[in-house]
Amino acid sequence: MERVDIAIIGTGPAGLEAAITARIRNKSVLLIGSKDFSNKLVKAESIKNYLGFPDISGRDLADRFACHLEEMDIEITEDKITSVYSMGDYFALQNSKNEFYEASTIILATGVMQGKLYPGEEEFLGRGVSYCATCDAPLYHGKTAIVVGSSEKEEAEADFLAEVADKVFYIPTYAGDIQLKDSVEVLREKPKEIYESEGKRVLKTNAGDHPVDGIFILRESVSPAQLVPGLATDKNHVKVDRTMSTNIPGCFACGDIVGQPYQYIKAAGEGNIAALSAVSYLAQKKREAEKKAKEEESHGK
Amino acid sequence: MERVDIAIIGTGPAGLEAAITARIRNKSVLLIGSKDFSNKLVKAESIKNYLGFPDISGRDLADRFACHLEEMDIEITEDKITSVYSMGDYFALQNSKNEFYEASTIILATGVMQGKLYPGEEEFLGRGVSYCATCDAPLYHGKTAIVVGSSEKEEAEADFLAEVADKVFYIPTYAGDIQLKDSVEVLREKPKEIYESEGKRVLKTNAGDHPVDGIFILRESVSPAQLVPGLATDKNHVKVDRTMSTNIPGCFACGDIVGQPYQYIKAAGEGNIAALSAVSYLAQKKREAEKKAKEEESHGK
Image 1 (spheres, rainbow over the protein chains, first blue to last red):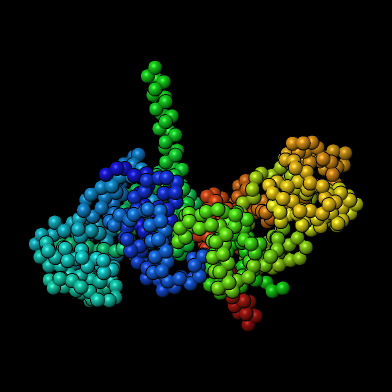
Image 2 (image 1 turned 90 degrees about the horizontal axis):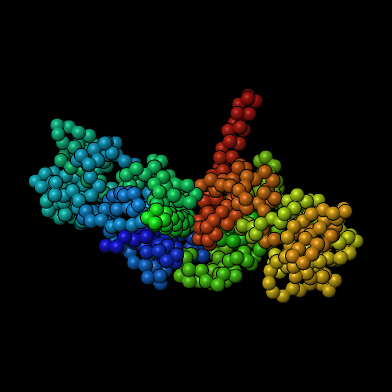
């Protein structure tokens, strides 16, 4: 796959506006996320302060956004990025199937992670705690696992895990019907803490303690520090300046991920800034590369 | 006139979004500016990256904004604020007729001043250089003046000045027809510099030197430091943090006035943030006042 100029992760208003602005500036764009946009947007009953649309439902606003993307020939690549690695002069974006995309710059617009990390979650991450069932399922042949899912989208991951593992429990943190294979046991409990005991990972809930081999915590958004190693954060939020630049050169962020207020028009406005900052960054890199090439040429003489 | 919670100066996308968000949060709002919104918006031929409106003219987008204001019962007070004074726990906003509005907080959304100050402009401001013909006309009885106007809106000011002054010259810095009283002499020249000579102010242009008693420089936006004494600025821009707070407590700014990129959706997003920051500020002030009242009550016992 070709390396793109700008990879945008997230399809809420921030990511969409960033994609549109980047495309207008003639950059190649990879827009990764859900074709249904963000859950938060689509499920909003009534939005009253997105300037230009007095009182519109999230569903209708999403339709307008879809229209805008179509008009500009921007496609959404439906995928979930689990890690982003800064490789010096480009970024490698890893998906849940261990495939990689490459981009010269990235814009993080994945929204804010709802809720806090569970105590012990960070400590055991990669050692019995995972954010990706599709990636780590092979490790659970004949073993037991708990999947904590934040939306119905995660049910497919639990089903897949159940094909491999000996026993899978599923704890939904959302309301509504659950559609899972019969072999998956649903627990209507509230996760409280993760700890280690006798070689097992134990998920403590309001109803008791569940010792298993692996605990999968599947949220719509992962914590930004988990997504991009080395990224400076402040609790759940990515630290940015007014140009939407993070501490990693070439990595920008916008929308709910960078902090409150969690508002659609604010997110879109920041997406615009992030895209133009990425464009400036690319131009600067190009100038530097040309200067270097010239210097090398004159040295060669 | 009642003191309002939030006075918003400017009716571009930043000011409009701020007004809508403030109204949703049940604050009393005074929105001051042109009912035609900003020139920059209305004259835009085609806007392609205001998310939700693929390829819309500035005129049509302005109509959508007008619709949104109407839906929310927000009126624009058509006026021009020449100075804003911080009075400790409120702000006084002075218009060109020397009348005052009062507000607990203010949001500056006047756009960016086009072009630079002329050399000498700042030095002679208030001493023969003025930004407001309506305010200072009485001082020019039987005297001579030059009006430098940045748009057709300023022609009325030159006409008014001509009723009082002995001789008025008008230098338009825009293209197009000029409609002025016969007594006003139009000079198609480019202002270069202002200096003092033999008790007169002299406007030097590309065509020559014009010694007069007063020079009026009328732009769509005044420089922010001139508008609000004590405001921290960086060249033409107001310094703000990510909450759109300026260095003056209770004074916020958004849109082009706080810096690039000069984009509609960026301005609207910032208007949203500024309004919510003003709302937080008002809530904090209220808590402090209540605490103080309680303490005084308990001291009285």
